[in-house]
Image 1 (cartoon, rainbow, N blue to C red):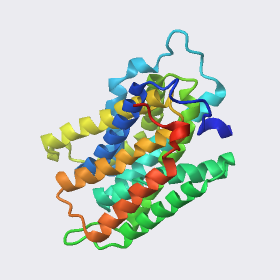
Image 2: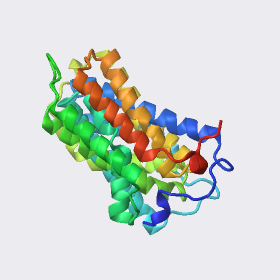
Image 3: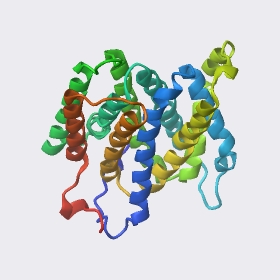
Image 4: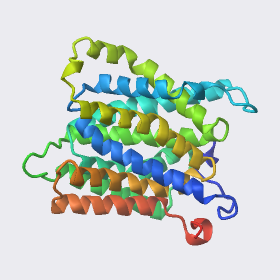
Length: 312
């Protein structure tokens, strides 16, 4: 991959439509929402079966997106390789790590840990693309690390379910998602957002299907309450169709380094779901961890106004 995948020196104000920012914001808010709500789903379905149902429902919703659009170039061998890794890391492994982690942790902790996404993107770009980490970004990485450490060590009060293993799995999901962001910037320049969404979902279904079928053999589907099926439908469409399409659509017009600013909405939405819908209580230590996480996001992604301010 090229070093310019995360940075674009052209002036943004002359070429970025406001709708692109709206797409990125909506995508991250939806991701945060379904990360939080998946806490309920993992209580009703085993992890691999849940992931398999998600990919299967999404596949049924967008088969027409698999076809190449008029005027779109055929997929090159490099595109096919990138699509596989985009799905393996950003769909398959992300889903398994996120669902297994949230089952052992809380929505609030997930929000804090997911806020490390821009920092991990910066580290991966340094390791694999040779990009320099600016002092401000380094400070953002330090805030992210401090926030994760604090939320992992904090007591979550009566009924808390957080564990170091759960938080470690959630951080693994962050690494997968960061890889997804880097690879997605390359793909978004060459393949339509709708086709990327359909192809990565198809790969995700193929990868998880053997494990999902194994768990389905001994699962009592009749024991699942109707509201859980509705929530599963929302999770499947939001995670595999809507958020991917929104993110890829926005990323076609916005550099990934600037798009990272919108990831601040992911931890906010996840924490809001935990507090408003799951009855989670925010302890002082968790509040401090959340503040550090948000500071880390802004430090790691906010560009100087002269270089990349958002249009009014």
